[in-house]
Amino acid sequence: MSATHFTRRDVGKLAGAATMAASSATTAGAQTAPRADMARPAPRQFPSGFFWGTGTSSYQIEGAWNEDGKGPSIWDTYAHTPGKIKNGDTGDIANDHYHRYKDDVALMKGFGANAYRFSIAWPRIFPNGTGSPNAKGLDFYNRLVDELLAAGIAPFATLYHWDLPQVLQDKGGWQNRDIPKAFADYAGIVAEKLSDRVRHFFTINEFRSFTDGGYRGAEVQTGSGVLRLEAAPGLKLAPGDLNQVRHHAVLGHGMAVQAIRAKGKAGTKVGFADNLHATVPLIETPEHIKACQAATREANAPFVTVMLEGKYTDAYLKEAGKDAPRFSPEDLKLIASPLDFVGINVYKPNFYALASDQAPGWREIPFAKSHPTMFNRWLSLGPECLYWAPKFVQSLWGAQEIFITENGCASDDAVANEGTVYDTERVMFLRAYLTQLQRATADGVPVKGYFHWSLMDNFEWSWGFGDRFGLVYVDFKTQKRTPKLSASFFRETARRNAVA
Ligand code: PNW
Image 1: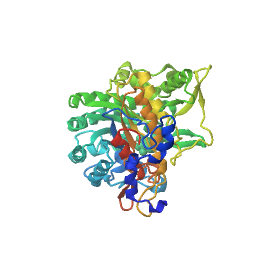
Image 2: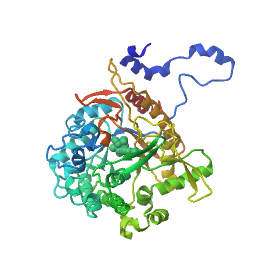
Image 3: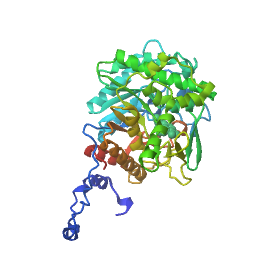
Image 4: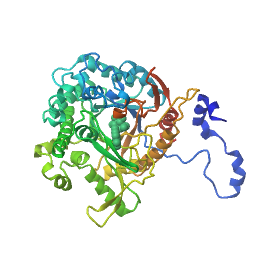
């Protein structure tokens, strides 16, 4: 059968392929040792009650950037600045999700998701950053949550996925020590309004991406070179000022946790969603594993480590020297407010490492020049990070509940003539990474859910609409949505609660 004759019905049949009898193989098999059933490989089963979801964020999909009283965010300003985004793309319309959310919930239901991670746009709720909430903004999320619940999909809400109200940037943004308090006030109001239906809140998404990326620019190492990442508001601060921004971000998280506890319904669960930098042992021996665990703790000193330990590591403070953040013991106590779960975005090994006799006790192994990356060039392929990241979160900090809040890859998708999107590399990526995640759960690591990034292709920040991360293809001219082959893979995985 040639690819051009491959129809949707064929794709449907793939799910039923396991029922195919291996009759022709039995004659030989009967005479020798028992063989595994070719058509029924051993299931790589996940724990029962596992959440299978996808993720998105407000600026990346909503559009309606100036509707119903929404104020501008720093991403509106940044994307409207010529030269900042590839091809001059903006999130003004994006996926028009603000108006098409019902269709989008139906898509998720179509591929069997039982959870959805979305973010709330702070400037929809508080166009002026603070003050009294905008009822129309809250209404949108009320409608979205109701639609999700009606479809049997559990809503998980992120409070900050980088779209700071521009008015607060005008007051210094995260450089200003008053912003954490403003964030906590906003978080408290949202929890008060939504926690009768939303049981899980993430405070902040990816601390490093918006602090380092937005206030200085960050660098990512790949085999073929270094990539520079920049984000709104596009500043280039000195290291000491950047460390203070990072400190205010984790402080904002801690204060928001307190506000959610104070205003949310009893039983509301709260945590963060951070892109933990996971160091992966190149060879799995006890000494290399121990070294990588220590490296993971240090690599996250200004973010996950301080939020879970309530102190900055000695090495971080020593290395920062005069540029170390200024903080009080009360700050640290707030930053480490107890959490119900830890959310981690995991795409790639931060670096591979091996143990070393020399300080700090590990040696970074650079990615080989030919080490494969996915279509988004910063993503060096390394499925084992989805084993080691949650494993170290458990072993270092004793987390009781862990969510994989993001994982996925971009591809250069196109809709084939007969209307199918053959994203074979995303299926390959998913199977490889989920096999490692299953290995973690089988080891007793308490991973409770997996959110694939993303539900659908969307505005991929500085890369605009070119880097497609969705399980669903989006034609940005017509807004037509087409589930990719990876959506069929996801559906089968969620249905079996095992790697398909
Ligand atoms: C995350 N890196 O960003 C964000 O949370 C999403 O909004 C985004 O769409 C998704 O991952 C895909 O990029 C990242 O260079 C951006 O390592 C860059 C990196 C990692 C995550």
